[in-house]
Image 1 (cartoon, each protein chain N blue to C red):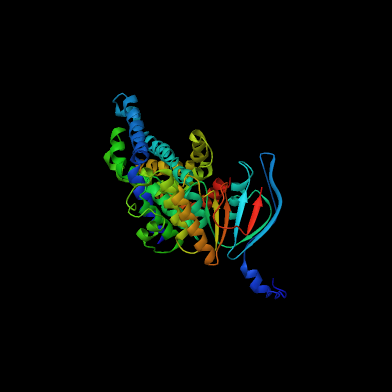
Image 2 (image 1 turned 60 degrees about the vertical axis):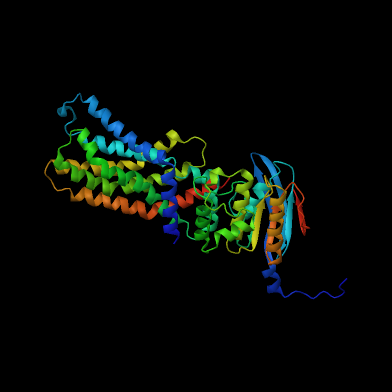
Length: 202
Length: 221
């Protein structure tokens, strides 16, 4: 054990913080989802959010992403990728057209085929998204996390409808992101293979 | 770049959901044709009413094509990603509305002479009809898209969208038909034409920002 802990340089310490939430409370339909939640997340940390169905995991993540604003409290967060229940891939477009659209919105020019092979979907670039199974679509939509670098990932039950192989790919992506000084907030019912630095139970 | 990218995406999606594009156009011609039939083949019965009929049906057809504008993007989640990821969301939104105008207002403008024929409008009035439609229809799409964005989160929007959009269309209707009437009576129609242009430019200026604000409300759930 370390005997002497260096007092962190204040600014540097602040820069390491990816996400801070103070006194976060949310009511919905007259029901209190969560109240007075305080947490913070630093570079390279993973936070799991657990809780039964309807406990407010998705709402919390949408609050953190800036999509839901009906909450009390304060959130300070880095730029984030939000990965929710809606995958954001248009059924009428092919896989490649969807990814190209995202890369234009973010301002990067990726190699679509290598992105797809990273999620085990190589060779699917010309397939219309409406012809993919829900697990395949989820794998394909994981490529969104690899477009450009955003320090914070907000993942809402990302393992849904992924097979074992798909979950391993997801874990790899998360591990890689964390080792790149990124941070991950992940709402899940299943256990992740990575040890979480913090667990929030709703 | 995002503007052209969004333009391309919208055109591809429209080409693959052709019924969303074609149905309002068919509705427009059916409506005009019904007036022609109701006039019992006698042009006298429709005298002076031609411009009004074409304009009102353009309003209604435009309103019909609004409903599908953001619905699919809202359902599959690309709308919330657009709001989260794009630094200038009003640029892709502008492209989106522009495509909606190209496929409804602009296409209807090009097809207007056919409708004019169906309501026995004299051929010398066709160019004026097309001019007023060309200048007025952008306002329909841009103001209408605000209403579409406001109602996209609601389960059923059918009538609500019309109740919101049609009152906004009234100034365009007044000056559009007014210009035609002025032309038929041999007066200068500059006044109405300038107003149509002013309304369209106003709508192009404010709509992308208003739509962005409305879409943010729609995904706030």
